[in-house]
Image 1 (cartoon, one colour):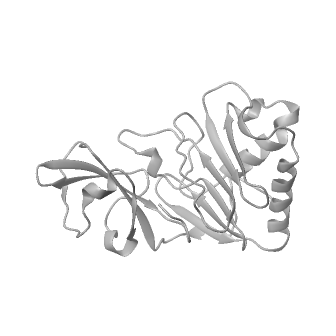
Image 2 (cartoon, helix red, strand yellow):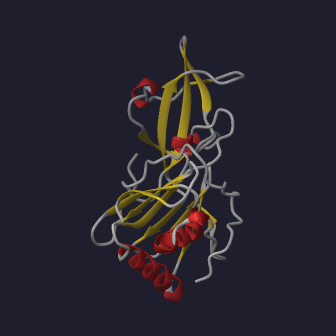
Length: 226
């Protein structure tokens, strides 16, 4: 399968301040979290995962606010599964791996067979020969593109909040959910109820009485829990 530079949602090049929230996506074979260059007031923890492969061959490609999806079949899926299997054969592949200089951070979760979580630090292009298969795979997943990719419309969002304010005005909170309950742990809400709200790493400023909150709505994948 040919992996080319992604043309959907202009995925940013990796850099410091990675968000890592994956690992609770049911039926996920592989999940890649990658750092991005934050814009002012962005909340990177609310950005979708960079790449997800499910057991049935469905893939999700994430940007800072949304996702695209496609279903792989035949040679494309087999080629990707083979590369994931080859990565498992690398010696001492666990914990934290430094592939080169720099502060870029990625986290790769492999769930088929023995669970494997790897934090990958540094410049992937500077990887030593023994780690080049891992670096090449991560680079390709970061830039993943497939002609079948289409925008993904989630049914649910992870509602998160923290006390604080953003420049400009604020929205009044008219929902029945108590926003303060989402400060310590995000909760799942129906996407249809927040059709006009910003999503992913783009937050909203919300007023509740005399308090102000920074609110995020992270798109949830099928079977994902906040």
